[in-house]
Image (cartoon, rainbow, N blue to C red; front, side, top):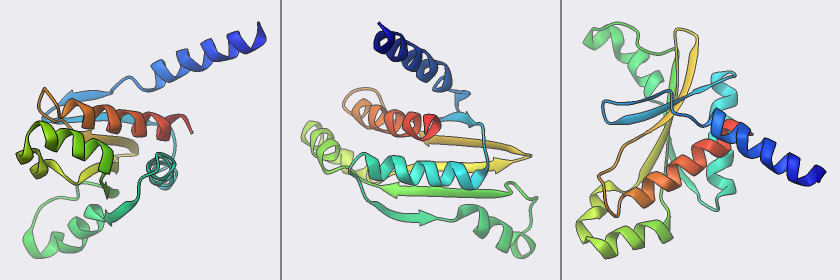
Length: 147
């Protein structure tokens, strides 16, 4: 009985935590209750724990801050990183459906801090076979949020 209650409580918490904060402008974002560094660490671990390899971390926030004076513009983020990776299994499935789905690979999950708010998110993909990618991204982000 205790185990059943724990499973139900865990499922309820996951559903509550993983509700998207925003799903507009072609991206889905989730609020993260913690620091940017903690969120970045959680995302990296969630990708690795899913059996995937982080191919690259793009430090977009650093680039924007470093080039702001040269190209103009306001400061957008205190910090922003994009974790780039691919899944051989999911990618093979979506490319089997349409070889031009290769254009969507690799996949990325971003972590941002702006005005004290930390968010984790990913770009939205077209309906159809690419929803398998969104399911993968949702699962990884959800794992990062509940770590």
